[in-house]
Length: 274
Image (cartoon, rainbow, N blue to C red; front, top):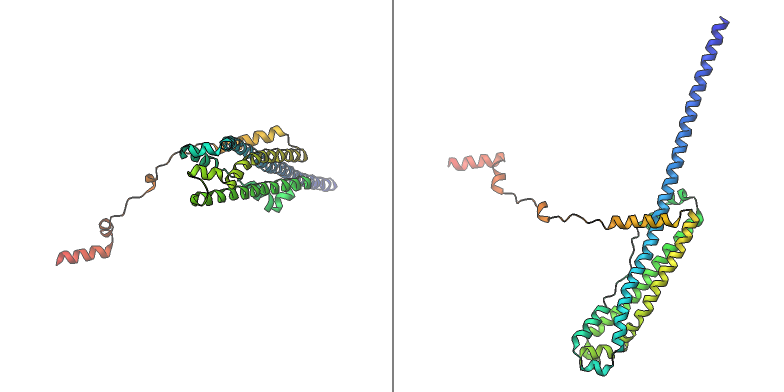
């Protein structure tokens, strides 16, 4: 009897140990999986925000090249003697001025910024206050650059529109002469060189600060660049050209609908009976 009791206790202890071990393994495995998932999510979030900042720097550099081209046109226009302009045809000069005044603006996708800034869970998961703080500074700087640039371009465009709308209010025999005699226009043309330089400085500054982000979060620059390239490649995928007519349903024929309605059939039979 004593032997049977010992065997029962032994079996109970083994079962208890097995159950305990199973619970430990289950919760332990879940904890490991959760930590791995959090680490992956943290890295993906960091890559998204740093890629967004890098893309902004690239956009600035692209716009800088456009302004370099327009700056060369502006330099040529400013070099023309007014006396020569007065004797020239309006066409080439006005065309050049119109092209110069087609000023591109800066804008950036704020999706990553919105996700990063408005979700407290994202901040908690990052677990790196310095990185969060520095990324926030970068986004703030990007918005400031965008607003400053937009204000400058708006002022130039407004001045141009006023002059173009009332050319006779300014001295000169031709439209081209009036425009190039105008100090506001000449000032705008000169300002393109400074705007171009500022764009280059903005791009360099934001990229330098993004390098600090990479250092703070421990992700190499090469990986961020590759992620940004992949995001850009995804944006460049050509969409299938769709024909809107394929989605237009034919008009419903009232007569064909009426024959399926019981009351319409009854009315029709009454009419026919008459």
